[in-house]
Every structure is written in structure tokens, then in C-alpha cells.
Image (cartoon, rainbow, N blue to C red; front, side, top):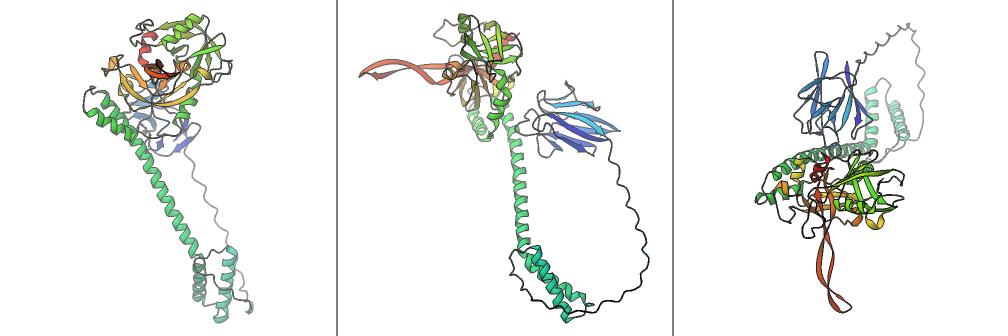
Length: 477
């Protein structure tokens, strides 16, 4: 029995592959038999797993992957026997395949033996006829010629040879034909060789790019883990952060993919037909947002959650609201955990993926981040349409703005151009996982001349901040 792999989730979903071998390797590295997409299928490791035939039975073996291998939803330890229809996932939310066993192809039938032909009486050769025709000169070497021209040249060569020698002398005839055709097709051969060489160079460059991308992803993960274990004052942090900046791969389609897969998990909080904040699904019936958005919702009374791009029809009643126990709305001098959750009547189509503690501890200054929310002036409760923003982390600090140990470093400063309605929106990492809840921005004081007089003014700072997403865990238990 041969192995057919049907891709049912991931970048290759909807395709299948057939293998006639005993070992099939799977992962993101280009030297695997089944190669997952290096950017889209990030749950899979470079060399993730093997499918192996032993004694007529097939098994899946995990190769020490980072996110584990799952068979029919259950994480395997080392190996797992496969049956037709078994679904195997590479990471809990990574690419998924279905195993099918198909019979080996039957060998092709033998061709029929040719029937013996009866012997024929020899036929006298027809008399030679001298055919007179104008001799077409051969085109210069390098000129492009077509089939009709080559046929004419061969005909002329045959006529020339037949006029000088008998037909029994075929060697000279062959030499003349070969000379004519070689001269006429020299340019085409050189062009074909050049195109073949360019194709080989392009394939080698593509293979090198795939290899570099896969290797850089693994190195980025390793450096992030190393950085997470260093204390804030360690002098090696700057060196590692610099290496991370050089290694980070560009991906022009990452933002679009992130928006498309997350858009149905983003909601506008609205009351009496007007939106005022953003929220996002962390459980099917629970949305995370900012605590001060919940304070505003409680003051408004009846509140609904409107699904992004749901044309105002996909709406859910908010039936419960809670804020973080450490949030102090009356404390104007300190920043406190500004997160909360609302419970809706119904279920969200999409639940956003939350970063792990290890991934949260690895984030730092300069990292790419992305936000999707509803800027205040663009809010339309009749047709909610969120805005995508790309930014960078400025600092990760404690509430005081100073470097702190991981458990206290939950303030994530960023430079996204958010406004009031974007409060409560998710903040994603470059790996496409939620790392923070957008909360607001700083206020800056300064002097400005108004009507010729110096006046103290307070205005919004371009630097905004979010609350690390694991603060929400206190409200999910």
C-alpha cells in the first residue's frame, strides 16, 4: 500500500501528495519530502516529524518538534500507529493532513508481439530523375530559422549530393545535411543553453532563500529565548537585540494574512447606535478590552458588541463586565492594570491566539507589532470596519516606566497612531500572536503661544502603551 497525504489545513490546504517509499519526512525545511510554508505554517518546526512504514503498518514519529505532533487531536509522545483517515497536526494550530492508504499501481501490460510480415518480391528501383532547382544559400551562423527553411536546406543538400554521387554513398549525404542544419541552428542552441543556465541559477537562488528564511526563523526563536533569560542590566542584551534586528525577515503579505484570519474576532463596543471602544475574542463568548472602556460601558447602560465587517447585523448583547482587580480608575498619578473582559450572549466566529509566557518574556524594544481597532473618528456602528496599523515596541517596562523583572514588566510602549476608539484593541507580535491590550497614551505638558501669550497646554503624546495580555488571565479563571 502506498501513502497519500491530503492537506486539509495550512498554506497547502486542498492539495495532496502520493508517496511510494517507506519514510516520508515533514517540516518547514526545504530538504523534507513534505515542505510546509516557512512564513504561513510557523507552528511546524524545520524537521518536525516522520511517517514510517514498518512491517506493513505506518507510524508517525515526532522528531523533537517545538510545538508537538497531534494525531486525531491527541498529542503523541514518540510514535503513533496510523490508520486510513487519521488526521495529523503539526502544532496544535499548525498545518494538518489526512492519511490515506492506496493500492500500489499495477505494472503496465506487455505490448503485443508484432505479426510476421510475408516476404515481398524485390521491386526494381525507379530510374534516377535529375531535379533542377535554385540552390538557397545557407543563412549566416546565428540567424534564427524555422522548420520550413531547414526542410528546404535538407532538400537542397540531398539534391546536391545526388548530382555528384550515387545514392549508395550515404556518408557524404549525411555530412552535408548535418553541416547545413548545424549552421542554421547554432543560435537556437546557444539561446537554449543560456536560458537553461539562467533557470538553474534562479532555482539555486530560490532554494537558498528558502533555506535562509527557515534558518533565520529558528535563530530568531533561539535568540529571543536567550534574551528572555537575561536580567535587564546584562550588557549582552544590546548585542542580541542588534542581531535580532538584522535577522528579522520581511514578509510583505504577513499583515494582510493576519487581518484576514483575525477580522471576525474583532468587535466594536457600542451603545445607542454609537461606538466607543474596541474588544477582541479570547474565548468564544468572552471578549477582552480595556478596563476604562468597561467603566464607560457601565455608565452608558445597554451595550452591544458588533462584529468587524458584519455590516451591523452580527451583534451580540453584553451580559457581564469585569475589570482587573488591580485597576484603580481614581488614581491619576499611577498606571494600573487597565484590562477587563465582557461576556456576550452568543459565540464569536474566531478566537484570537494568545502568546505564551515564553513568547511574552522574549519581546523587547524594536519588535514589530500590529493593531486592529476602530479609530474614534472612523467609527460607524451601522457598518463596523476596523483599521490595521503597524508599529514597533518602544520599551517594555514596569508601571513606573523603569526596567523590571518579567512579572512586573507588563507595560508595553509602542508608536502606533491609535486614537480613543482603538482602546481595547489587540496588539500582535511579529509571530501573529496577541501580546497586549491597547490601553491609551501618555499626556505631555508644554508651553505654546496662543494669541501672542505663552500658555501651558496638555496634549496627547505620540507614544502609546498597552497592557501585557497575561493580565487578562486573572479574569478568565
